Length: 79
Image 1 (spheres, rainbow, N blue to C red):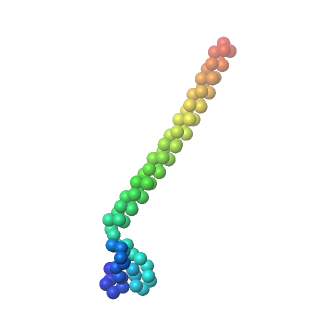
Image 2: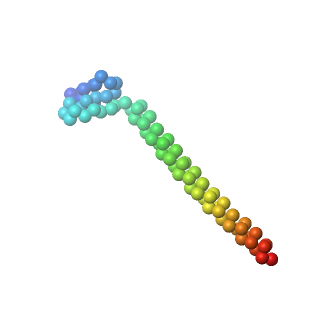
Image 3: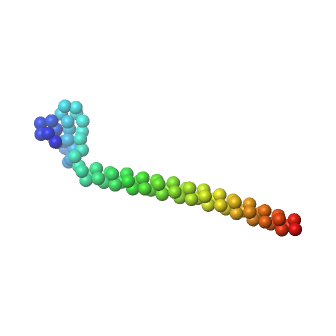
């Protein structure tokens, strides 16, 4: 960071831009931890979506199997 433009705040890793008043975070470890949490959250969301699709497919298969079973039972009755 440019020495004349930024001043350190009372919190470690945070600096104030004297020109704009913006607070800047220079804590790279915190940034990496945030990115990792976000990546993990995305993976969890993707897994939940996959599980939901699998549950829907399983429900469809169960319904289809029940219909086939009913057709077979009805066919036997008609013989």
